[in-house]
Image 1 (cartoon, rainbow, N blue to C red):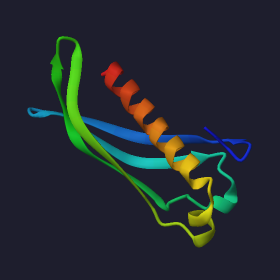
Image 2: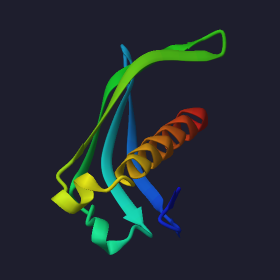
Image 3: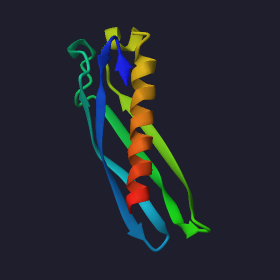
Image 4: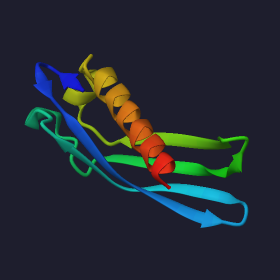
Length: 105
């Protein structure tokens, strides 16, 4: 996503664990490349995912997943109107990665 004229790439390591109840989803790591240093988000943003996807029926996977994004940021970052852009960019990236992982599995 674009932030203050810079292209920022978010990398996340997603885990998909098959269990009898469904496919459980997790996230191990979140990394920002291209984020302005002033935002100071490295190791301060934690993404958690809870939920499971049930086996496909009629070519569709169904289930419920809750994404929680927690950030321990300084006052400058918290008051920055661009923080919404960052949060939405992270969410969009993680959801796209999740969709790609599921389609490849």
